[in-house]
Length: 220
Ligand SMILES: [Zn+2]
Ligand SMILES: [Zn+2]
Image (cartoon, rainbow, N blue to C red; front, side, top):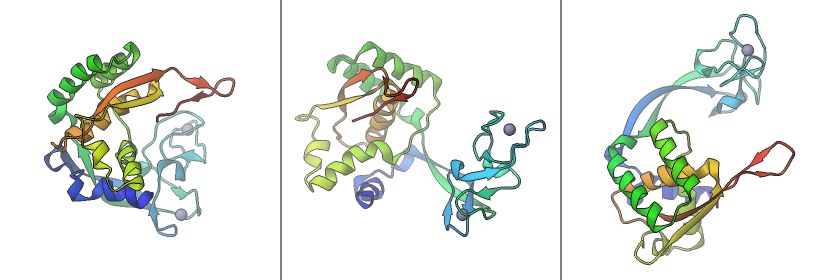
């Protein structure tokens, strides 16, 4: 499954390497030699640099005691939470999608499809709020998983995903996932310049509480 996801996500034939839609940026990341991998922020521990706090088990991205947001590459006393050894800071290359280059095509899609697909008011509001705010965080390979899971099932996956004339795509989710499906996923597909099946209708619920105060949301 993972291999198929990576194949669809990286194979040039599928044009997910978006050429001019992607900018390149060097970023420092925390690498553990013992574990032989880059560490997610939650796997990095350090001493909180806030003077009155000094919490010795602050997470790489945030101190859970005082709430301060942290950048793991600027911290001292870094520890790998998995093996407790001291990780290194390494330079890495990252590709970023230049969403402003897709703005006109994306807005055209949203304006047309929100009417054709009868998007609910909360889906439309959430979409425009995210476009206005302009701050995103999503794994590039997460929405592409919809495509790759179809590719796992059948080599004829393009019959579904590159056939917008004959396929209507409906998606169901909690409201916190709206922007990933109305902005990020269509941008990924529109950016290739190919004839992808884009989501037509989105059914958005509020949150389902499965414990007294814990929010629970799923996208399918
Ligand atoms: Zn702190
Ligand atoms: Zn380690």
